Image 1 (cartoon, rainbow, N blue to C red):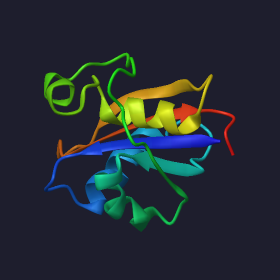
Image 2: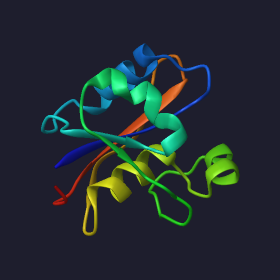
Image 3: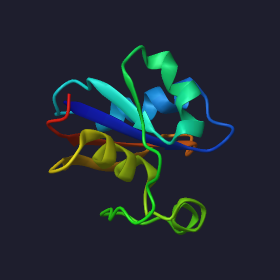
Length: 115
């Protein structure tokens, strides 16, 4: 299972997410699932992939740290934490957080063994 985790600002569009994914996906296996917090899932439906909600991301260690993400969500990167949480125990991050060119969305990719 290859999971793309997303974090994004309220004004982000599906195109913002697609741009972040395109940058993150270079050189890794194709994404099979997308993940984010439940309030972020509606926009992810546009990918047409199975969506994995991640109820809480607080306390999930991430290699990158955004002060805004830490203050709002309790984790250094919503994208990284969502990808890791959704991919399951033992997941590993293939691509750390990548920011879309318009700076509205982030994407990280993790590999795991959960179905």
